[in-house]
Amino acid sequence: MITAIVPSITRHAAGRASNGPSRRAPRPNPVNQARLAVAAPALHATSFADRDPGTAFPTATMIRFDRKDTLQHRFARTLTRRDVDPPTHFVPGTAAFTEAVRLGLGWGLLPEAVARPDVAAGRLVELAPGRHLDVPLYWQFWRLESAALAALTTAVRDAARTALR
Image (cartoon, rainbow, N blue to C red; front, side):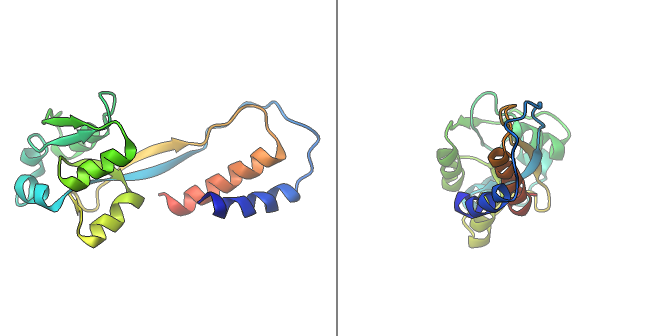
């Protein structure tokens, strides 16, 4: 994605003149990244198929990044309307987390861009079709602004709007 952004940065920066750096406060630039609840087909068959979410999510093994990761709990609460405390594996690595879900060690929330191809190929099953959890992402930068940073910020936001919800 960076290679797609770089030409855009060059075009934006070339059209702007700069009178030196500005010291304005940074503005948060939230963009939502949808996360889908998914599981391997075998786990789906044993823990979710033909079961009400209210009974499936409290007992199905969950994958969490670490003890501070509450995304899975938040999603389960939206479906069950109560807090759940299922068996949990902690997998503190992004690629390893995704692979643990693919291998059927538990269900988890994956970024839509990661999950959709696996769902389409049958490697993962979406647990609540049409439901997702939005996670706000922020583009943060130093207060020191420049034409190049402004162009990069614009390019990142444009790319995020295209690639994310």
